[in-house]
Image (cartoon, rainbow, N blue to C red; front, side, top):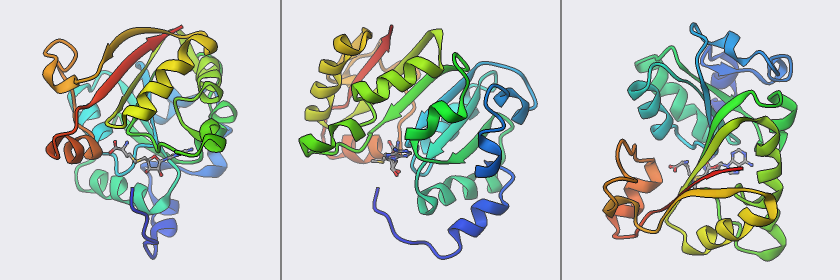
Length: 214
Ligand code: SAM
């Protein structure tokens, strides 16, 4: 995600009713259903960027509540603007660093986690910052319900290979692995494209995907 400093982004986020403000995030630990009109399964996307995927998911699945997590105000602002134009009751956003998720969600509170086109952090010394790393898998293990799964998509072969290698040491098992999502009719059924997925698949890159459980 190219990051430009968008003037006024922080202020717009602070005023948005679609964004759960930072001072409330820890209070809501264990009570996230209270931010939605309906109590229903809770799915999150970590590193949602401008929110194209999660908005499409919330529209397609009104019986699921979605929370989008994004670190940078400048991109989160775009997701908020989309919601202002056409609000959805089952979608809300948090501006936060994913490293904080265990302070914000109670054990087992989340039913599914989506990681889409996560930043690759190519240097070895930064491996623990990669969202599919074993360090992050240990955090997801805490907040995800027993039957919960993680879905990860990327066009980055190196990151995908790394993510697969992290599974066994972290105690996770693959339910689905594909190295060409768009050519796999079963795996791509109901697939909603992320902004990056549209961009990279249009360039001819195959899309890698896994679904994992403990
Ligand atoms: N998921 C979107 C997509 O597929 O189009 C955006 C992909 S973009 C390459 C990765 C996004 O993850 C960026 O917006 C970045 O700011 C966000 N991100 C990276 N590390 C993060 C972290 N630790 N916590 C929250 N967001 C993070």
